[in-house]
Length: 395
Image 1: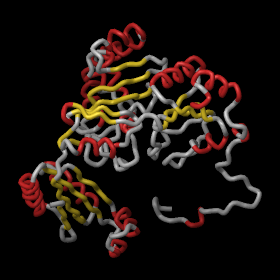
Image 2: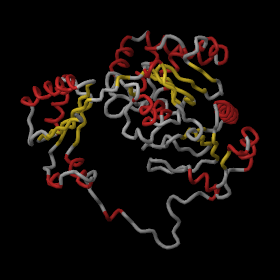
Image 3: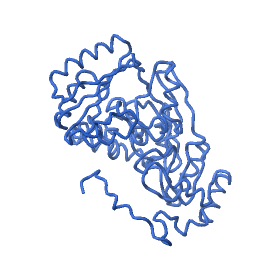
Image 4: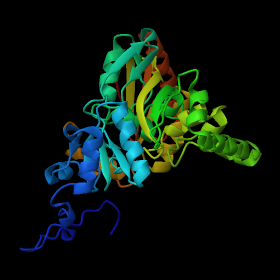
């Protein structure tokens, strides 16, 4: 069966008496195991530990298609709680997963051991330097942070599609970028500093001038290891070139190895590695971002092409013209979108090979927007289009 083709026959009704495939396992019926519950409540207080099966099931689902029932849920209130949980888990070889908004489609906010809620008590935005920087707690949504910055004419670089719901802790942990961030405005490139809790419970504030000295005292083996890896990478010119090439394109696979090239000290390397680490290196307790100008003048265009190759060939031309975003849509996407209110019904009849580009330019003022429109218009005669260009502005 071709990918994305409907197959109603695959939907099989459950037979009477057959347990649901996502049924909670019997071991979780009584909630958190007694020993784990007693140890966590003794460590943090009973009010910070959710242990009943209804609590565990509530946290077993996020925006992904997966379902993992945790053994216990901790509602952390401050960095001391985080440090205590991580120290406890480190000493007993237990797993810890942090959960804020849970908007990722890949299940990073789920686990089968200790799940830590870091949204409820982890919201807050502090605008710094007239908006040129901003300090944000990890449970704060991108939308709320940008709302605080908008009055200063500034905006965050990362622009994920779920900005209204996703939180900055997840944005940094996943190196989320969105349609407009690319490789220059993403979390890695715009992060100024962060406060990080290591699996051992050690707290690192990368903005602290004494951070490297304190980290060397608390985690000497970690510091040696980071510097040894840096020397090993830099001793191999071919590897250095390959790493640099990999991060000239959008790349969120694995750890950011270019952190070893961009950082000169263990703390600087660790700051880079934390971005995109998906919680595997510790907990991001606070972030400080360098912000970008909020360009309020927008102009967008939708262009239809006879094929994907024809559409792809146009992307570099619009990039050269200064487009902030160029989104590619294939025929399946276009035809499926007719279910969205406002989309023309005749898109359902588009030829299978049809493709489209949604192109967006942003400028600080009307004059800048007019210049971008002039550049975009100069590109059009070089394209193979199958329909008139539809364009809009926010003027």
